[in-house]
Amino acid sequence: MKKLSRTAKRLSLFLCVAAVMGSCKMKTQPNAQNPGPVSTTTGLEYNADEGFQVSEYRDQPVGPNLVFIEGGRTVLGSFEEDIMNSRDNVERTVTVASFYMDETEVANIHWLEYLHAIKKDSTPEFYQSALPDTTVWRKELAFNDSYVDHYLRYPGFRYYPVVGVSWIQATDFCKWRTAVVNQRLSEESGIEVDASSGGRIPLESGVVVPDYRLPTEAEWEYAAYALIGTQWLDEIQTHSRIYPWDGHALRNPYGKEMGYFLANFRRGRGDYAGIAGKLNDGAMITAYVYDNPPNDYGLYNMAGNVNEWVQDVYRPLSFEDVDDLNPFRRGGFLDEEDGYDTENFNSLISNRTRVYKGGSWKDVAYWMSPGTRRYLEEDSATSTVGFRCAMIRAGSNY
Image (cartoon, rainbow, N blue to C red; front, side, top):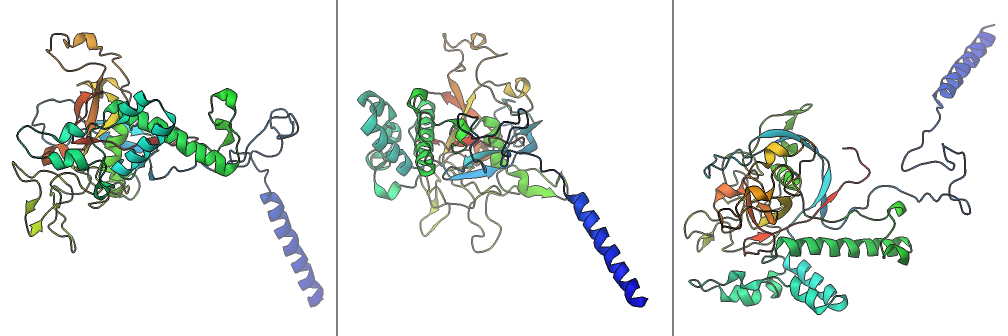
């Protein structure tokens, strides 16, 4: 009887386990990575002869040099004292969607690769239009001649940020980069480009990257502050930041680099690098794009080295006008350029003035706060402005 009782208990336990496992077998719901073999709308088979073709998809390919920036709610604006009395970036709460951004500024070697490519397959006129203005280094009362001749092309400057490029030139570079990266991805995956589509790789293939572009001002500022490093427990940020690092100080407070500056900037009139034998930031002009510690998103030189172009048209009160989800000013909507007397030179603001941010080797520390902003004509170039690229996170709701 005891043996029978034990057998009955085991049988009962087996049936219970089988029942639980059976109840756990739920119908697999289709998703982007696993849409299933047939349509949930028509019941027709995917990828059948002359049927609807559904390409394999795992995730958005990550382009070279890009870092993922997880979006979220944040407070944008200048946390520095408003010494310019501009009040053009007042603190406000916004949400920025996730995106990708170059971990470094675009360097001279990248621009030389671009010039090499377009020289082969573009018109001479376009090639000439893509050449950086190396004369931005020339000053009537300074001897910077070596930079005029050597900064762009001499091998020692390969991984220094490209300068002397306008907002228009930077935008053209982004378009070229998109085409080249997608062409490589299509060749690696065996996707044939349809000539009737103008050579564009179909989005439905799932192997293409979205367009490289300049970051919006909100994206750039959000990525520079990198407040992901200040979060404590659940959705609690312990503090904000003045610079892309913690604290009010400009020097590294830790380890072997204690006392060294955390960015490449001008400390004061005539002081670009410190005293010989103990050069502090180590750069009288620009610096190696990987110099200085990265911020909490892994981005280098989001303060100092060179200012960086962003997409936005400049308006002093954009913070009042733009949406609180992915804020961006693409033109003069709600603040037309007719309200600014540019024709009589009483204002420099127009639909052709673009924002740049970040501070440079030639700027004092004030401009390294991510909330500060300046503007320049989109066809202008200087020795203190460069750029980095960004890209949307496609197929994502965060």
